[in-house]
Image 1 (cartoon, rainbow, N blue to C red):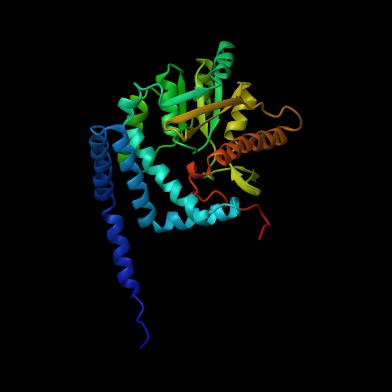
Image 2 (tube, rainbow, N blue to C red):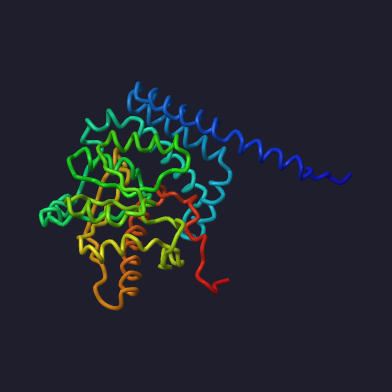
Length: 313
């Protein structure tokens, strides 16, 4: 007997129900995340990390769409990898990362948990008095990276976009504020002026630039495929003449994390448009190199290659 399809009216009612209840559901989820965080801090760190791994494995099993996207993207970017194993590890890493952020009030008093190499690059740049642009991506526990550098006394200003739901935005801002970070809103009409002002105060302007965010962009290579990439960091670096470093965090096999950094000089030759594209490509190449060192610690479910160059099939 043929299967009767679900009437369009029923699907429409379900969509309206989900939209109507989105606010209460998000409120409950945000409060639940906060409550879990409070509970996690009462646990010994090894137990908390084990809980994080369990949460990651559960998310891998339950979140079908992100899992399928991650599998497809790993197959595209790293065809030689065991995609199934790598994606499972990615979810486990994300679960541990959530637990670490919840545990931050205690971790900030354990300087051995995050080791830092190359701080002389930041010190040298800030000694010049013109601020510093720090390029990074959604590699490793990037929130822990910013919190650690801020807790160690570095003047960090994080470029961020406001999360659509105010409850989740409040959670993120609460964590960043507790870590001593300044937030520069990327959607603020005065954003570039705010960045210039932060650099003028000799601060480190930290920018995540490894996602195909809305707005303009240039296509540069990323894992062998052209990826639509925001040119803002390159424009800021070229216009302000501030020094640039790439800064990344990854897990250490023995536990904890390692932060490493190195200068990334912008392109100085060619037309203005050419310099922007070449500089964006340099920054993106540094992010790709960091991902290759710890491929399970990147957000493979993000649709990084969603937009394609005009005329590409």
